[in-house]
Length: 222
Image (tube, rainbow, N blue to C red; front, side, top):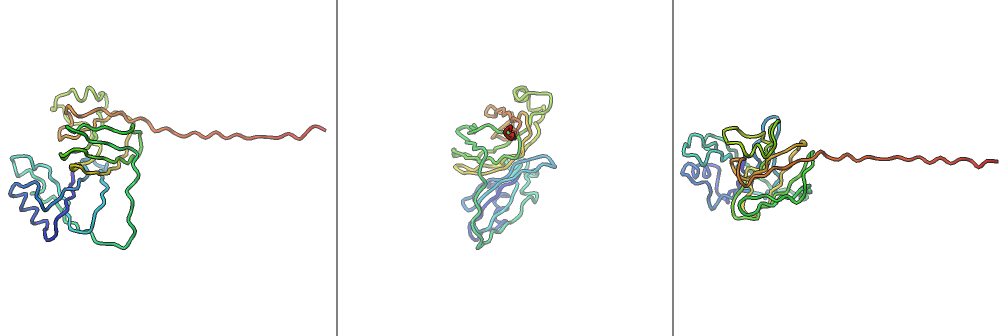
């Protein structure tokens, strides 16, 4: 999982690291912009953001909520600085979304349209004052989504299918996911089995069929 963090002028990745050592997950001079969630290899997960010139840090906050600080990924070196430079090139527009997802109170997601199999651009809008995840897990073969959600956590997760590690409060973040037809669990909490998670059925993409017609004209009989 990855978070993109924008630093105020004069701040560095070392400052963010020292803040993490002191137990500060958020600071007034570091703004979290969101980032891609977890996916199993060889799959990938992604995020589309509009970054302004400045200094950023790519960081993994996994383990930050644990008392065992030895399992905090950031403190174990999972971070990289990133500098965004000014450019004279024209501004690139964000990709047009296939689906718009609204995160509402308590982390419940409302999809504006069904999801079909294939590569889909999802625009995620967080209408709350809380940071949420936005992730899909494919339901394992042999089970329905309802059966999967009813299982205890000890049964293990589904198949991570990408999404977003973070959608900050009142923010808009875009992700692109290549779906297969089938059932998925869509959730916004660290645990996928949560009362706010829901079963999403991804339908097979419709193939357009073309019908060609030929018209023959007979010559008039003499």
